[in-house]
Length: 190
Image 1 (tube, rainbow, N blue to C red):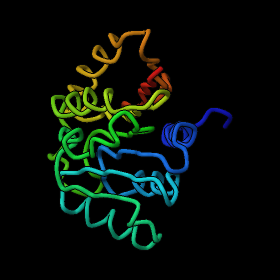
Image 2 (cartoon, one colour):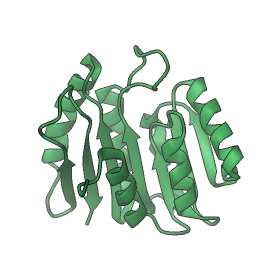
Image 3 (cartoon, rainbow, N blue to C red):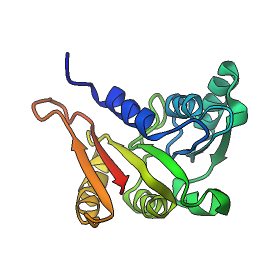
């Protein structure tokens, strides 16, 4: 397949935006895959801030990072991503090169615990101010569940109205897929 699938495309965007020594955010830690990838990309001098509201996510992510020897490059927070600007030190404001959200629920856990449009929008609004020039926010939108549809329907109009002079907004989606396949919104600061 010549076209990249959704998650490899997201990781490719992260790799292009994030430099060695950079600052990154995993807004939805989940099982730690994105946190681990970000920790690899930032290198020894960089740092990753990762958020989740479930202890299971923090435990799995911490184990994954310890196994890879990358825990010292990260700060893991058992709290919502809507607290991002109060957690990231002021010295890193305006220097976040990449942030990623995998919206929905933690695979293999309680599917009633999902990301919500209000906290996600609050986190995005904060991250827009924390981004460095050419910094990127990636939203992987899983909309195959009721909460996902609501979140999608609130996020799309919000990102569509972002000022063109300040941001590029991309939607990457396979249109002929069944079962509400996930898609990506990428927001790049100019």
